[in-house]
Length: 239
Image 1 (cartoon, one colour):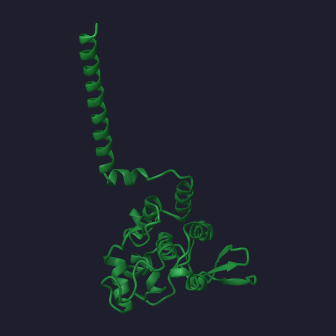
Image 2: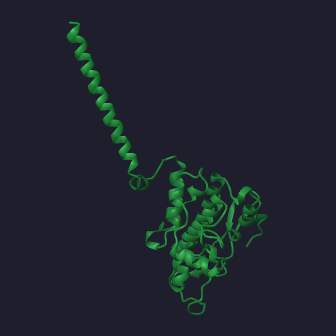
Image 3: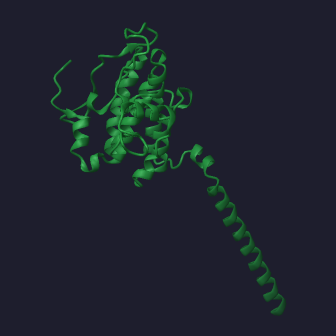
């Protein structure tokens, strides 16, 4: 491949305040990553080892996905020993850990979700020795399979509800419940960038919004009736 003059996303995170990037910069970089992976997936290739050190940033800030050394073609015979887990535990999808011989492009979606989480919050979804995870690779793998990560908005309040929801959708344990592909991941980020507000799914999850609306409407109706009665009383005494 051509020489890329710049540095890795991993190096950028290490030198950034609190090891995280701003929302706009994070989205811009992750979109480049998603476009590259979407192209690979359309050609039947799964990366299997997406992580910040495998993303290079050129002098113009463009992100380039590298190191397809353990990539596989969808449906091909795996060239690893039976049961061998390949990849980096901090960014591995649950199915990459539990059934490594039957993964597809949605595994990369999960790994990108882990990267995006780290870019926005300064840390991956699960870290050794934190949040009840002990200091072993097995504990990290178990957390990916069994535990739900903390919502990124609870770590950084400036992350919007909508963007946090997209990240959590990318980190669903079951591939069938996850964002179905990098192209859809891109579309969701584009929609979020249009300022479309909280997604309909989020509104359904929080019934308080509709209850408050009904209460306000009821109070306004009562106020209107009281005003009407006051007007009638006034005119009855001042014909």
